[in-house]
Length: 119
Image (cartoon, rainbow, N blue to C red; front, side, top):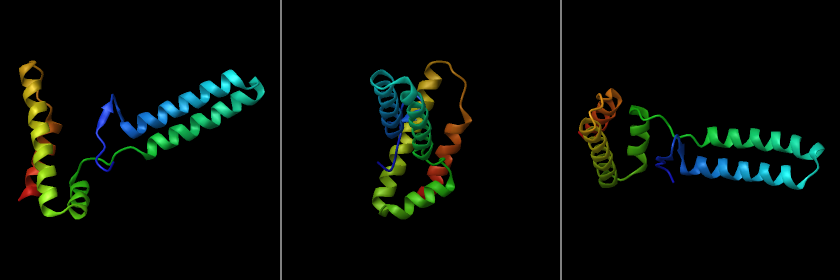
């Protein structure tokens, strides 16, 4: 999944799977192994899980990310991707306005980057 969206709070789906697998492994080790073995194993699993989660973090959404995305997709796919992202951002801006929340400048920044990429 190249275009990971944050769907579980601050985590992408891939990061959530890593976290769940790590927590599950720690739980199983702690409940099924002797304490002398389970605690060091739990620490190792926690560190590995943390590293995997950090490595699976999506790239920041900036001009470099757009350039890489543009090189990987065909022109038509890239245009559709940009239009979909712009529509998502506009929907988020609209929802914030309807709820009386202050405008988030990061939405406008990303929208301008995407609109410039379409030109």
